Amino acid sequence: MAHRWRDNGLRYGLVTRVFHWSMAAILLWQFSGIVINRLFGRSALSDFLNSTHGELGAAILLLAASRALWGFYNLANRPRHERGILGTAARLGHIGLYVLMLFIPAVAFLRAFGSEWGLALFGIQFVPQGNERVEWMVAPANLLHGIFAWTLLALVAGHIAMALIHRFVWKDEVVGRMAGKMPTPQAAE
Ligand code: HEM
Ligand code: HEM
Image 1 (cartoon, rainbow, N blue to C red):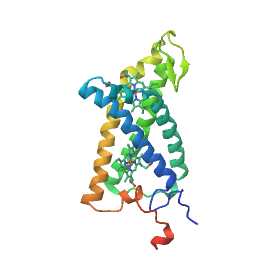
Image 2 (tube, protein in one colour):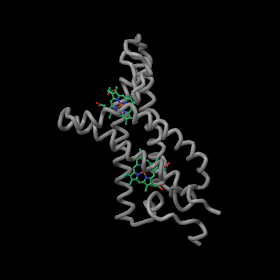
Image 3 (cartoon, protein in one colour):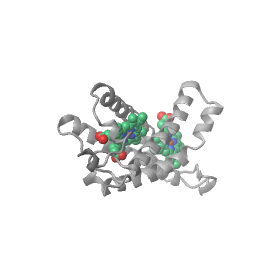
Image 4 (cartoon, rainbow, N blue to C red):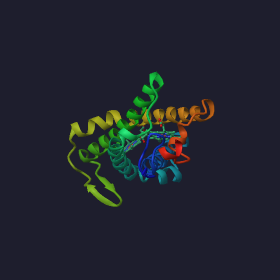
């Protein structure tokens, strides 16, 4: 009996899809605030979108970690990447997305714990303001948080471009694995 919520060789199941599309929505929110701020300057809209930066970062970290565990659990029965250079590029791209989804918020939290700024999430003050600064905890995020976040955005843009190419140029079934119908292996026979 193939369950709708598990992955199978033909398509991703409901759990993977909920992880995938909720993460996409959260990242859209996260980057919109920063990009709108960069393009048009600070405004009520960018302040509103950016006011949840830390909370959304925490959600991304938790979702990415759970999603990676779920991915390992389902590894043997997920749609396979194709052989050859394109398949390898897709596999490396997906691994890169996971590494960045985990690394970017993780170094930001490390910085928050080691800095004098303090950290409040959901109205709870997790780290008090005015702590003594611990240089080794602050340095990685100062160096890499922003650069890696923009790298993630570029990788996501490439990922979306590839999805569009699969759908509209090669017209294959790849997008259907993450969206659309949910065939079971029996149904495909
Ligand atoms: C995956 C989750 C996250 C993404 C995609 C993300 C993305 C970004 C981006 C694009 C910037 C602007 C960089 C620039 O101005 O060039 C930024 C800045 C910043 N983020 Fe995040 N962020 C995430 C999680 C977090 C978390 C969890 C925290 C805090 C605990 C945080 C704190 C900050 C701070 C303090 C800045 C300004 C200083 C800096 O640029 O490093 N971020 N973030
Ligand atoms: C409009 C936006 C997006 C579209 C159309 C899209 C499309 C897809 C499709 C069709 C697949 C299946 C590929 C395959 O079977 O080889 C996939 C997988 C994947 N996507 Fe996306 N995606 C989008 C946004 C994102 C975002 C924002 C992220 C995260 C940063 C992401 C991360 C992944 C990962 C890691 C996989 C591999 C399967 C998994 O482990 O969940 N995608 N995406």
